[in-house]
Amino acid sequence: MGRDYYSEKLNANLLFQAYDTAIPQVRDYLEGEIEYVRSRLEGDEDVLELGAGYGRIMRELAPSLRSITGIDLSERSVELGREYLKDCPNCTILAMDAHSPVFDRTFDAVLCLQNGLSAMKGDPANLVGQALRLLAPGGRAFFSSYSPDFWDYRLAWFQEQADKGLLGEIDMERTGAGVIVCKDGFTATTFDRAALERLGRSSGCVYSVEDLGSSVFLTLEKNR
Image (tube, rainbow, N blue to C red):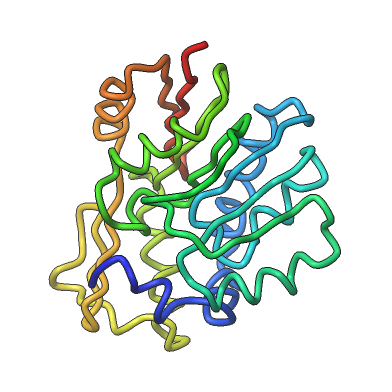
């Protein structure tokens, strides 16, 4: 299934339900990604999040930032996000395609978390390029995917979502090696360390790749 799966099916309140997980390791993973980014920011940044959904990460990071702007392809998720973030004055959420964002400004940091390189489909190198284009000189972009060590918990989480009717039934015969395939056509891939290293090298920026045990992070620093 193409780029519109999250905008047309798993959006808004359904996406909210997906994050309401009973699996403690998944809750730790979600919080760990936020803490990883928070610990690497100074607190006075203007930040952009690509694929922000309804603003889950934005709400968590907002108290630690000067401002955070989120964009998402789903109009319904953005509508929910405006309600969800209404008491966060330094948050702005907009309906926009992360593969072709339109801004007349730059940001101190750009986030593409929770396997956004896979979830937003399209050319991952283009997402990296768009992030760098919108970064101020010296700014940093953060991309994350799933660590191979997290596979069992990730699969359990997707099964939990399928049991809730948020995803199609998982095709276990075709699922494995980091790829989850559902019988409704949805496929979730990952970017391993080698793939993130390739994106880092091709960016022409100073980069690092770090495996946290649940996530693998690629961090790029735009040349000054």
